[in-house]
Image (tube, rainbow, N blue to C red):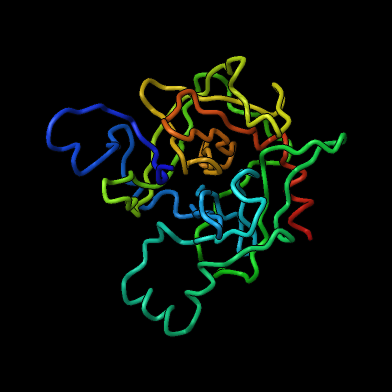
Amino acid sequence: MMKPCLVLVLFLAGAALADIEKRITGSKACDKDRQYHVQVESVQGGKSCGGALLNARWVITASHCAEQVVNVRIGLNNQVSVFTKAWSFVKGSSKKLQQQISLAQQFTFKDDEGKPHDIMLIKLNEDVSANLPVIELPPVECTRPEQKQKVEIGGMGPKKSGGKAEKSVRCATTEISECGENDKPAEKYHSDESTTMCAQKPAVETCFGDAGSAVEYNNVLHGIIVSEPADKCVNPIVMLDVCFYRKWIDETMLK
């Protein structure tokens, strides 16, 4: 399976293809944006996703990104100096930025009929620093962005021919669009028009590893990417509407 990437894919001829399998052309380095981004990876291997830090103890992602023991890596895009990182290592606080999370600390939303939805809250073993950037939640009574509104998405860097993924977080912009009949989460998860929304912009695609990443609208969290392509990137991008789950998020974080 491919490593995480968020890409505008160009098929190029020539020697350049020997070094890079996919080239990010529609995204850019996030720089100081998306410092809340986390990476969720299964301990057994085979699963790699994004996520977002909500506060010092909680992360939000897609359910299919976990449902087994996972490693959560925090602070991937933090703008701190090498000296600060070294001092964190000496103090031992850097260990908090990579935590192994058991099933008991993973909370998938289930509706009144007991059907799971592809959205999950992860409770960390230990609080991370309250100074770490987090993503802001919308108001409890929020509504989803209207069609053609621009939203921000993100993910990790491209896979290179040696099998290594670039470690930088990449950002791109797309637009809310109408979902097609087949634009939905995996079959094991419930979805309908009230829970699912889509985004599309020519050539802006999500790839394996981008699921679980946050969708920003007006600088707050409004969606979680659930598209999970195995062998190629996809457009449109399927997301769950955070507003539908807003009260559940608050209730779950009281646990």
